[in-house]
Amino acid sequence: MRKEPRQARSRATVETVIQAGARILGNEGWAGFTTNKVADLAGVSIGSLYQYFPDKLSLVDAIRRRHLEDCLAVMRKSKADGLSPVQFVANLVHAMVDAHSIYPGLHRVLLDEAPSSDDYRNPNSEFEIEYLNYYAEAVGAYRNRLPNGADHTAALIISDAIDGVIHNAARRGMLTDSTMQSELVRLVSLYLADAGDEATA
Amino acid sequence: MRKEPRQARSRATVETVIQAGARILGNEGWAGFTTNKVADLAGVSIGSLYQYFPDKLSLVDAIRRRHLEDCLAVMRKSKADGLSPVQFVANLVHAMVDAHSIYPGLHRVLLDEAPSSDDYRNPNSEFEIEYLNYYAEAVGAYRNRLPNGADHTAALIISDAIDGVIHNAARRGMLTDSTMQSELVRLVSLYLADAGDEATA
DNA sequence: CAAAATGTGAGTAAATTACTCGCATTCTTC
DNA sequence: GAAGAATGCGAGTAATTTACTCACATTTTG
Image (tube, rainbow over all chains, first blue to last red; front, side):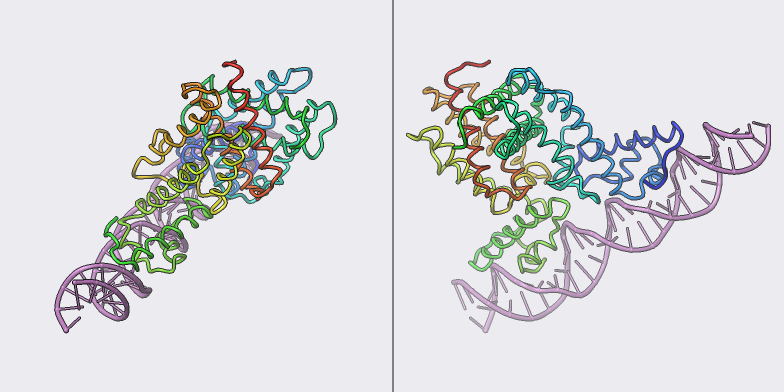
């Protein structure tokens, strides 16, 4: 950031800029993401935007940081303790659907399209590590032991499958389809339940 | 197309342009896809490109058409007849992995980023209908009856889950990881096998 | 060989857009 | 309430980018 916002007014400005940026990025993709558009949508002047973000990339980074932390916060809320696999997965799926409902395309754009100056995007980022650890722990929990390497693979599968289903549902405008959601829960639950019984095939 | 290629030489030109276009689009995304770059990589002059493609969009359409037809061809090859669920799914997964291995990012870019003049991209395109019908038939086959609405949902789930896992594996450079592939097979098989026994939850 | 098909690539016109800067307004502080 | 700090403004620009043309060269065909 070029200048730290000190008053409440400027903090609100930064906030609306980030929100507007997320919206543009999610709806129009990286190719349609211009600083002037963001300022317009946010209802602030382009000059104000550049008072807090030294350049375009730093704005994307801020949006990414914000979005990924929102995702993690949502995930931390749905803990596995004491729930049946189905219940746990159901909570998780609903949480992820919610997280994607705000700006359906944003997640994919941030991970796939938009460049970044820091390393939040690469496959071994802190974010992705915590993200996958969370899943791996859940898998391990259902096998009644600490997570190991196999659980890590399972975590990848689960997280990526959920990601794919939600992403494509959003593309088709079916994010809120309850049948879709329950079937997704079933897909993951079956895998998670079975993962304890049989070893690697 | 602006002009139909009549000699073998020009047909080859069109071919290499489409190949180069697919490569650029897959590697650099829609934002990095310029006609000059494509001509360069193809080793033909920009003028030649515009002799067969009236504008940029028509080139993308040609690339999309080509890629989606390749996908369908791959899928038609792996028929479900007489195979166990696991065998069938294994074939399918390997086929899809192969289809994505050539230009890992292309599929996603074509579906998500790149605009289109025709309707190949929208969720109800001929392509997507045939694509999903194929899955729905397979699901129905395992329930020993004709496919119905529920199978169609199941088809969506399966196809999107596979898509998500493969896409993210590609992003992580893990497309050829055999553990990943076999776990993906297990995820889908379990769902497919269970789908016949229990009704909708 | 004539004519059709194909290939060439420098050049351009137009659009796009990230970012600056001089100044106006609002807030804090004493 | 005054001074100074913080914030807000937005027309303007400089630089880049890029889709596409056209006048001409080369190759193929009949």
